[in-house]
Length: 138
Image (cartoon, rainbow, N blue to C red; front, side):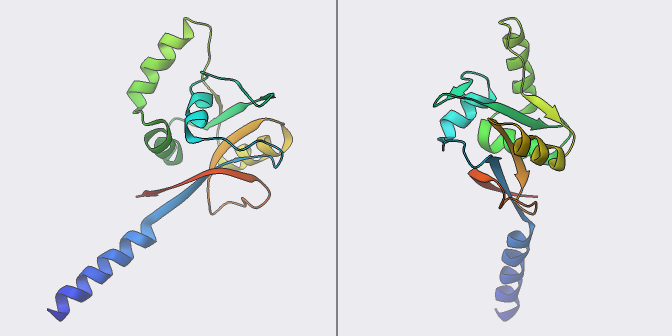
Protein backbone atom coordinates (compact mmCIF):
# COMPACT_ATOMS: atom_id res chain seq x y z
CA UNK A 1 0.00 0.00 0.00
CA UNK A 2 2.81 2.37 0.89
CA UNK A 3 4.51 1.70 -2.47
CA UNK A 4 1.22 2.44 -4.27
CA UNK A 5 0.81 5.81 -2.51
CA UNK A 6 4.42 6.80 -3.21
CA UNK A 7 3.99 5.83 -6.87
CA UNK A 8 0.78 7.85 -7.22
CA UNK A 9 2.38 10.90 -5.58
CA UNK A 10 5.42 10.59 -7.82
CA UNK A 11 3.27 10.41 -10.97
CA UNK A 12 1.23 13.40 -9.80
CA UNK A 13 4.42 15.38 -9.20
CA UNK A 14 5.75 14.47 -12.65
CA UNK A 15 2.57 15.75 -14.28
CA UNK A 16 2.84 19.06 -12.42
CA UNK A 17 6.50 19.46 -13.40
CA UNK A 18 5.75 18.70 -17.08
CA UNK A 19 2.83 21.14 -17.31
CA UNK A 20 3.82 24.06 -19.48
CA UNK A 21 2.19 27.44 -18.97
CA UNK A 22 1.61 29.92 -21.77
CA UNK A 23 0.25 33.44 -22.08
CA UNK A 24 -1.28 35.58 -24.78
CA UNK A 25 0.39 38.96 -24.32
CA UNK A 26 0.02 42.50 -25.62
CA UNK A 27 1.23 45.99 -24.83
CA UNK A 28 -0.03 47.44 -21.56
CA UNK A 29 -2.55 49.73 -23.31
CA UNK A 30 -4.44 46.94 -25.11
CA UNK A 31 -8.02 46.50 -23.85
CA UNK A 32 -8.86 43.20 -22.16
CA UNK A 33 -10.66 40.63 -24.29
CA UNK A 34 -12.69 37.49 -23.87
CA UNK A 35 -11.57 34.08 -25.13
CA UNK A 36 -14.18 34.35 -27.90
CA UNK A 37 -12.77 37.71 -29.01
CA UNK A 38 -9.28 36.21 -28.95
CA UNK A 39 -10.41 33.34 -31.21
CA UNK A 40 -12.18 35.75 -33.54
CA UNK A 41 -9.07 37.93 -33.79
CA UNK A 42 -6.80 34.99 -34.62
CA UNK A 43 -9.28 33.72 -37.22
CA UNK A 44 -9.56 37.29 -38.60
CA UNK A 45 -13.32 37.34 -38.08
CA UNK A 46 -12.77 40.70 -36.39
CA UNK A 47 -9.79 43.01 -36.72
CA UNK A 48 -10.65 45.81 -34.29
CA UNK A 49 -11.20 45.63 -30.57
CA UNK A 50 -12.54 48.80 -28.94
CA UNK A 51 -11.10 51.05 -31.69
CA UNK A 52 -7.69 49.32 -31.64
CA UNK A 53 -6.60 47.48 -34.78
CA UNK A 54 -5.28 44.16 -33.51
CA UNK A 55 -2.34 42.41 -35.17
CA UNK A 56 -2.27 38.73 -34.12
CA UNK A 57 1.08 36.95 -34.30
CA UNK A 58 1.75 33.25 -34.78
CA UNK A 59 4.87 31.25 -34.13
CA UNK A 60 6.15 28.98 -36.91
CA UNK A 61 3.99 26.04 -37.94
CA UNK A 62 6.30 23.46 -36.34
CA UNK A 63 6.26 25.19 -32.94
CA UNK A 64 4.93 23.17 -29.98
CA UNK A 65 3.60 26.37 -28.45
CA UNK A 66 1.63 27.13 -31.61
CA UNK A 67 0.15 23.63 -31.68
CA UNK A 68 -0.88 24.07 -28.04
CA UNK A 69 -2.44 27.46 -28.85
CA UNK A 70 -4.38 26.05 -31.79
CA UNK A 71 -5.60 23.10 -29.73
CA UNK A 72 -6.45 24.90 -26.48
CA UNK A 73 -7.51 28.35 -27.67
CA UNK A 74 -8.73 27.98 -31.25
CA UNK A 75 -9.98 24.40 -30.72
CA UNK A 76 -8.76 23.46 -34.18
CA UNK A 77 -6.27 20.96 -35.53
CA UNK A 78 -3.52 21.90 -37.96
CA UNK A 79 -5.51 20.41 -40.86
CA UNK A 80 -8.69 22.24 -39.85
CA UNK A 81 -6.78 25.53 -39.80
CA UNK A 82 -5.23 24.83 -43.19
CA UNK A 83 -8.69 24.23 -44.68
CA UNK A 84 -10.03 27.33 -42.92
CA UNK A 85 -7.31 29.59 -44.34
CA UNK A 86 -7.68 28.15 -47.85
CA UNK A 87 -11.36 29.18 -47.77
CA UNK A 88 -10.56 32.56 -46.21
CA UNK A 89 -7.88 33.22 -48.84
CA UNK A 90 -10.59 33.38 -51.50
CA UNK A 91 -12.38 36.01 -49.40
CA UNK A 92 -9.24 38.15 -49.33
CA UNK A 93 -8.15 37.28 -45.77
CA UNK A 94 -4.67 36.22 -44.74
CA UNK A 95 -3.57 34.28 -41.66
CA UNK A 96 -1.80 36.05 -38.78
CA UNK A 97 1.79 37.18 -39.24
CA UNK A 98 4.21 34.34 -38.52
CA UNK A 99 7.40 34.92 -36.53
CA UNK A 100 10.19 32.42 -35.93
CA UNK A 101 10.76 32.78 -32.18
CA UNK A 102 9.22 33.84 -28.91
CA UNK A 103 11.84 36.59 -28.72
CA UNK A 104 10.66 37.94 -32.09
CA UNK A 105 7.06 37.90 -30.79
CA UNK A 106 8.14 39.82 -27.69
CA UNK A 107 9.97 42.46 -29.73
CA UNK A 108 7.07 42.89 -32.17
CA UNK A 109 4.49 43.18 -29.38
CA UNK A 110 6.69 45.66 -27.53
CA UNK A 111 7.20 47.88 -30.61
CA UNK A 112 3.88 47.68 -32.47
CA UNK A 113 0.67 49.02 -30.96
CA UNK A 114 -2.16 46.49 -31.27
CA UNK A 115 0.08 43.43 -31.63
CA UNK A 116 -0.76 40.30 -29.64
CA UNK A 117 1.14 37.04 -29.44
CA UNK A 118 1.57 33.93 -27.34
CA UNK A 119 4.69 32.92 -25.45
CA UNK A 120 5.78 30.47 -22.79
CA UNK A 121 5.56 31.84 -19.25
CA UNK A 122 9.27 31.22 -18.74
CA UNK A 123 9.80 34.27 -20.95
CA UNK A 124 9.77 37.76 -19.47
CA UNK A 125 6.01 38.46 -19.43
CA UNK A 126 6.06 41.20 -16.77
CA UNK A 127 6.63 43.89 -19.40
CA UNK A 128 3.37 42.91 -21.16
CA UNK A 129 -0.32 42.81 -20.40
CA UNK A 130 -1.40 39.18 -20.04
CA UNK A 131 -4.67 38.72 -21.91
CA UNK A 132 -5.10 34.99 -21.39
CA UNK A 133 -3.20 32.06 -19.87
CA UNK A 134 -3.42 28.30 -20.34
CA UNK A 135 -1.57 25.14 -19.35
CA UNK A 136 -0.58 22.23 -21.49
CA UNK A 137 1.00 18.95 -20.49
CA UNK A 138 3.85 17.65 -22.60
